[in-house]
Length: 109
Image 1: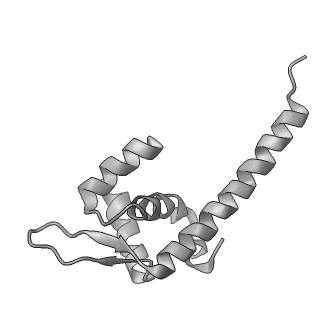
Image 2 (image 1 turned 90 degrees about the horizontal axis):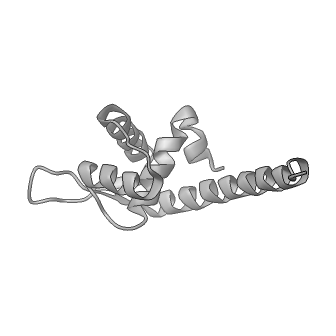
């Protein structure tokens, strides 16, 4: 895992979901919430969502996009894409180990 998401500690889960959503294009808060619900089945509350957005912006992993209305869309930065790729690769390795161990230890009798 990169230092950027590692610095988020227990907040890395919402950060990973938000970065994954923004990898598909710029979105504002409500659109992020609906997209994350759609692909992950997770509903982020407003406090969690906007707290994570603030942390991600502070770490330059996302940036705001100009908007004509009151909505504030965000987009992934290059640094954010790099951090997301490292985080997802680490999660894939973890999942591979867990699934492999399950196959070995929990074979049906």
